[in-house]
Image (tube, rainbow, N blue to C red; front, side, top):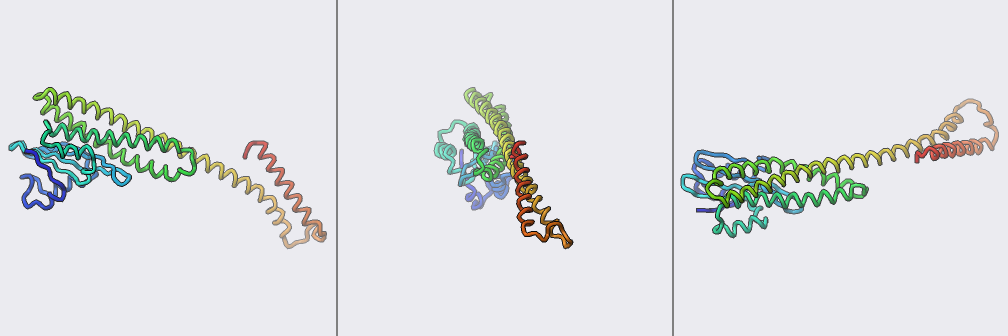
Length: 284
């Protein structure tokens, strides 16, 4: 028998869904985004737990998906998060549950396909950031998006490892009984390995883009500091004359009206000379 329950239904059930597991614990498994994918055996009950990336409201959320089998009675329960209903592959799975030859295989297939869509989307977004990396207008948004995508990549890695473990475990238990199932699980295993490679590649790409952004920001900072240094040197010259002629002591030419204009002229001539030297040395 195959049954499915939502989070809300789990909370409303008067009886415990499984003999050794409380409803609150099931709900915790569904809602805890930080727990990695794993396979646990509890007495005669087996729980297959997947974390699936779901794209919603312009960002990814990792949602829990449990397949629970009571081996003693041969019952299978699919426990899911409501947000997964928006996921097309999962919706098709729920709609066709009575025609599924092997529930475990299909649930694993859902996980692998979800991560494939997830990685392809991230690949597109990383390439978009890479194309805008030298555009000053997008620097701030690129840094924020890069941090966000890198975070969800780090969360995806252990989940993919866990799905690989689940495929191995399922293959050992069921693969010998059904050749077609064994071949299907091998195919899923290969796909999962490829997705893990893509995730590692995207992680390396994220590091490269981050280094590029840092280098560009450092270059821009150097330009700003160089400009400020040139302005400081140029302003220091009239400041020197102002300081000298601001002293409350007798000074040369203080009684001549043309002295002020002479000082201005000398200051401007020295500033132009400094700028000429900086220009010859390609400082700007």
